Image (cartoon, rainbow, N blue to C red; front, side):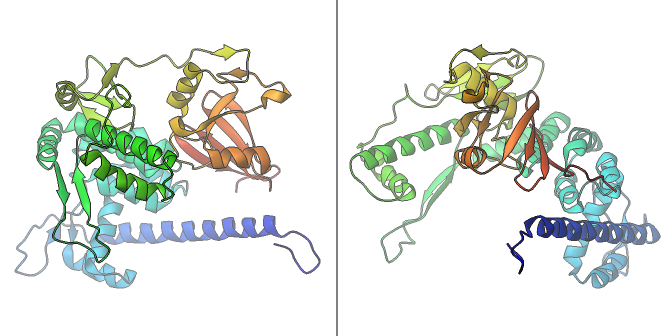
Length: 408
């Protein structure tokens, strides 16, 4: 973007955008405090009878105060939202204030937008107090930069650890929900039908691998359809035996399980999994399942060559999990391994100079003027062409002030 005199206004536009975001965030905190003040004024222990006038209603988890239902209805009108929306907003506010004190401290200080805190709160309400405290301790200090998926993993882990009965009940319910539906009664004019289902993770990974393999074969045979269409065609080929699932070539399901824990973690998806589920998967002779101890990621790997060996690539993927570009969520195992200091400029091929970058961000770093420094293993400082700084580590991304500026 250029002004009438030909100068570049890009830096000013970005600065204006950040300033307006700051105004919006301060207004959100002011609204939130008003809502909490209103709840304190209308807090009640009176359960009453719903059919006879006002009564207190629980809107957050155990330990949060009850609030007058009529008061919440009136608050909704002031907020300009429906009563149901007001109840959800108030419930999240109470959950953060009374059951997630570390998260609340960051929201009140303006370090964490409430919409991120609300995502956490809406998912911890069903947890016992110890579970909510676990999530609060694990995510509060990084809540501003981790994504939804990692937040949900911590919440799932809390349920598995602190409410095992509910977790086991949910595991059995989920197991009973497995299905695979082909909607033959809803055929489109083009002759297509919808297919959906719920599978065990090992079966789903093997099916995904089989479809991707067959889709690649179809392309080599001259099919010019898109990848999605070729994967759809592969389903029919597999059903007719034209493509087969080679169990020697499927991607194994890698799991980490401590001896003293009832919760494991799936390396493929980084999701927490009950030990009982892992035992059931291992009883199936078809999937390839590998149970591993936790690796020591402090080892330093160095090779005197440009090519990155598999053991270094695996270490990078276990350290970083994703592409290390700000806010990118592409899995590290599907990324290129980049030399932070280019190999041609003397950068070594080793643990302290390599990191995963997805193909697009690898091109941006190589040709787009972006650079990064390795501050520590798994921690990177990115420099943008317009002078902004971003700190990226395995917990997420944090924007930093440009050089010469101080935080207010």
